[in-house]
Figure 1 (cartoon, rainbow, N blue to C red):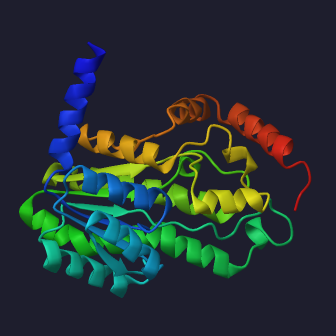
Figure 2 (figure 1 turned 60 degrees about the horizontal axis):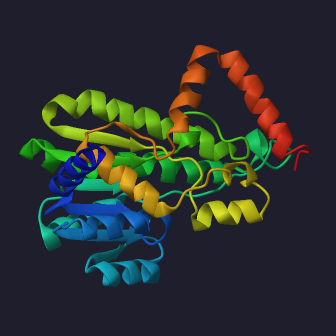
Length: 281
């Protein structure tokens, strides 16, 4: 019986991705690269690998027979150009994965972090984690709405549902990313637009491992998963038309605990912070 369920899920996934035109920002490494490779393996007609790191994007694109487009998602003109290039190369975009992220503004709230962090950390985080999703929607929604179909996958984070105890700007802007995805789903869901919000916890990516080496991501290395596992959750979630895609199932329970008793949840998060980071940095 379990094998039959898995087979049905597999068929649904293939039908969802096969022959689709897909754009992935932040596609040169980590989750983005895993998504690009998985989409290509599932038979996508065209996969566009967008990233600020042009050379790394070209490597991924060459591996999968896709197209690399150097893109800074914090610049609207570049996101618009990305969408135009993808459509001109492969045809109408079926799935836009707004996935790029940064780790600017880490720290535990001492004199150089939290509310005391430089405005540049907050501004860059806001542009990459929030405005990049806005720019993507502006760039692709008109054509999708004209066709009456299309999918937006916005990568947020479990930090956007909960809070990351060592990354203030990251947590705040990821909360905003979740809120924007919810708004898109509410507003355009009845007009043929599917919206999904990807919220992983710890994933073995260059960004997280770099933060851990710097002493700021130790709490996320417990239960860490691989980018390929995130890609698996994404294709399954897209096939099932799931809004919240949670590669770490335990995140759902954490969110429920937060909703049931916010004060108790905050106390627990304070204890978590003290256990991993007993002294402010």
